[in-house]
Amino acid sequence: MHEISIIESILEVAEEKARENNSSSITVIKIRLGQFTAIAQEALKFVFEVARQGTLAEHARLEIEIVPMVLHCVVCNLAPEPTRAMIFICPQCGFPLKIVSGKELQIEFIEIDECCPTSKAVA
Image 1 (tube, rainbow, N blue to C red):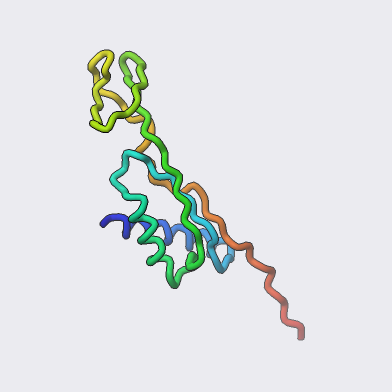
Image 2: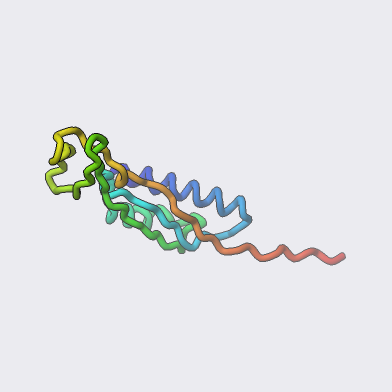
């Protein structure tokens, strides 16, 4: 299950950004997940629930935006709807179709708790 290493990497990036901003917790991590990836959304959510324990994201919410697959023929400019058969040949001219979107896996944003100013010691 490669979802484990994906979530571990996402949490690592999120914690690094939180620490850079002197934050003690992460509240939301939003990712964009392409429809054409071999990554199971439900598996990502499950792994996140387990992997976030003991991290700055322990109480964070994972939001997943599914990016639809968009195809485009570079020869005749047809943009056919993807089919369940996953045929990547243009139905109009017979040339290969290019996947324009749907392969994404990226962090859209990380929301952190803003750090409170450190109280100064009075001598």
